[in-house]
Structures are given as C-alpha cells and as structure tokens.
Image (cartoon, rainbow, N blue to C red; front, side):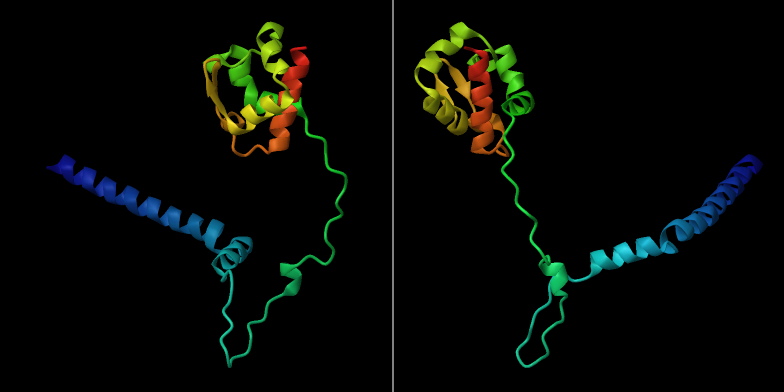
Length: 161
C-alpha cells in the first residue's frame, strides 16, 4: 500500500512539473512571439469582403491586388527534352516496361519513327494501347505540357537514330 501511494505521489509530482515547464515554454516560444502573432493575424484575416448596397465599400489596398508594373516577359525558355525524359520517361523507357521502346534502341524505334513524329507526339500526349505496348497519356504525368512531351519525344528519337 505504501508503494502504491508513493507511485501515485510521484506521478502527480511529474505531472505538475511537466505542466509547469510546458506552460512556460509554450508562452515564451509561441504566445509572446510577435512574428507568430502577426502570421496568425494574417491567416485569420478575411480573404475577401462583401460590398453591401447603401454602405461604404470595404477599403482594399490596390497595391496588394495588382502589381505596379507587370513583370517583363523574356523569350520563352527552351524546353530541355533530356530533363523531361529523366524526370518523367526514364523509368519505363530505360527498362522497357509495358512494351515501352527502350531508350536508344534503334531496331525497336525504327518502325515507330517511320510512322512520323506526329504519330509519336500523338501517342505520347494522348496515350496509346496496342499490340506493341501501353503508353499512358503524357506518361502518366498530367502536369507536363504538350511542348515538354514533344521535347522528350524528340530527345528519345535523336538517341535512336
């Protein structure tokens, strides 16, 4: 019975000690931090305001909504077909998974190249299912643009010629 009482007393002691330390550090590192308070206020601020007829329109800062000067547009950056291949196409085309023509395999690529680049582009962009294998649209990467897919196809065709 004494042992049980000692364990209960020790448990309460540890609980109150941890609670005391935890409260002080919580206040010091979170509640008293002005940057955190500012970030919380920004997150809790309304995203938009509604203008009601007959009342003054809510004031918004136009500088926040529209930049003073639009960014200068430079020439379009060339798409790197090799980089797209490495990030999206490598897994299947290096190993020949699901009938994918292996990278730089001239014999396998020759009949496909003979059908023309437009057919290759269409199969890569829209997907392909046939006797020769399966190609998901854009290699299963919907985030790729058509231009990036064409650049990757060009890279693979160049390697196979």
